[in-house]
Image 1 (cartoon, rainbow over the protein chains, first blue to last red):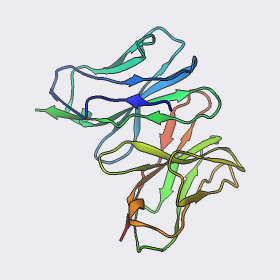
Image 2 (image 1 turned 135 degrees about the vertical axis):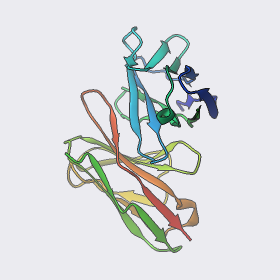
Image 3 (image 1 turned 180 degrees about the vertical axis):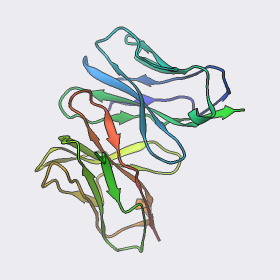
Length: 115
Length: 112
């Protein structure tokens, strides 16, 4: 079965500093999407960033950017200028575009932002 | 545009009781999903649907049932509730344009 692995259960970062969250996946698909979702204490799941596998250019959204290494099947999230509001659980997910359209989620990384 | 709505927000069930978790979306998405999230864990797929009348099992379907009679609604039925079903349940739908999943606010269910 395909899996998504987040090897860091918890990370801490000082306010205004930069932090990188790791994610690896083991898909056999040639076409897929990758996502990072944020889940703050409110429980609401919020899309942070999305990457299409066929695009070599790394996606960016304001302070959030990814390092997509397709050959290594790695998809890390970099958060720059960390803010207190960034504290949350972060989930990495893969969507193989093989027809079933089932998202595969990692187990999450809890990010703490220290003032 | 309300997005994905779920009711109820909280529920306490006694062992053996049944209930239906409601989910609706107003974005005309074909794909809809039910997940459960146990404390400190990630999301596990219970059931999903690719359109009205079409449903399929995810990785943890036992003890649950779904139906999809309309594009908008995707209710999840719990039969004979067990303590192992204590969890937070999320409904989601996804856009066929960019595959972004839109999540509801979740239902916290406790079975005692």
